[in-house]
Image (tube, rainbow, N blue to C red):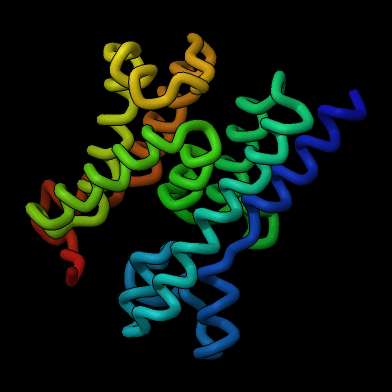
Length: 204
């Protein structure tokens, strides 16, 4: 019981830190939730005109997903999936912002790095390629998470060929499936914008 409480505490605490909100508040004295798409993630921070703050937000959001899962993999490996899920949900539902957070993509990437380097490289590669083709961050995020899920489910031998230490089990598959469904949910407004052809493109 103590272990579960500890895992929940540091996983939620790390995942819930709204770096995009804090950075724009500190440097611009503005509320990022009232700018652009109202999202607290790196893409919307980029719309403020500061590439530096956008990159910093991206790095910090990735880090906050990586750290708790990495710690859990060392001290509580049997609860690594729980730690990952709590951290991911914490970014989307941070108590500090009345449970209205970001879309979870950068935090998802940080979690993925802690789980498997090859899968995280696959995610990054897919995201960049799709972004260069379509210029939509939302499309890149959804397609990349779907790619990771499909590879994990149907191409087990491929992943093991690159990462022999990857703990490949049904729990991991189910976890990535949950992440994908949640990412689709957090992008429901973007999906609507894409249908209506009003989704803003990113400048790469």
